[in-house]
Image (cartoon, rainbow, N blue to C red; front, top):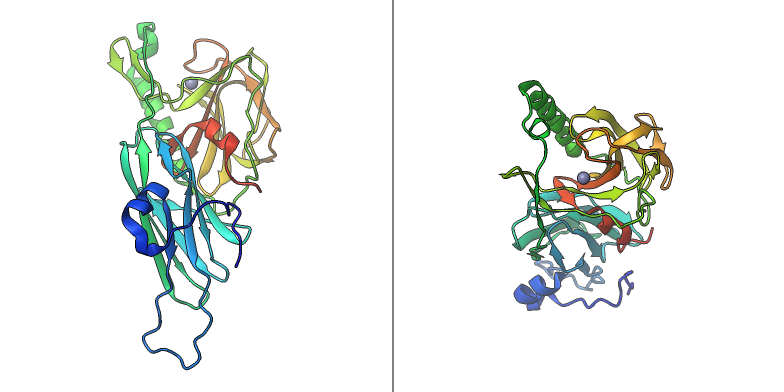
Length: 312
Ligand SMILES: [Zn+2]
């Protein structure tokens, strides 16, 4: 029997489904016996175990879905909250990152996994992930009217740029470019802040803040949080000068309000490689780095990537 990387975690049998499934987000698939029993029973294929780490999440969190007991399996696929999971081989297992968007309603988020085992038998598992409210703060800001009330041209421009960003996030590169842990993208005096905060600007509720802000001096180097491909360079109305890195399998990190950019589109950068410098371009009230992470359609809390339970 193989020991999975998180071998200490308990795996419960399928029979004890429901509540356990939900609370532990852990399930063992039993192999269905063939209709006609062979004279000499073939050795049972290894059991398939699905493990979600962590088992309970808050809005904006990242979950790693591990599928073990998959030796010889193929077509490992699945979804969480209706969104596709992009699996990659992980040791003798498969793993996928899943994002819980910061505006996901607290409650149960269904997941399902399907695969074809080494004997050619399709197998399935399903369950639900408990999502808790993150309790994001509400921030009331007063800004000059000209920064808030966009003229029609600026509004069109911002809308076009939002469409471009969405098109980027919809592009899932099938190759996993990132490895191991992600790194903080800038040396700042204070930890980043503001993820998920709901802004009410001049009395008008706005989109929640989907990144974290690191305050740093203009010109401070900004580095790639992990290995990735420069997917987009832009000069956007809100984001200012920006770099978007594609880490593969639907994961992007974003670096906004940059003063300078030192990479070109299509270039592959390594973790820690300088991509630009801190600035205050776009809608910004002072030099800082707005650092964001997007996983499929989910806006996730970037520091979650600094402590992923993935070793390679
Ligand atoms: Zn920001």
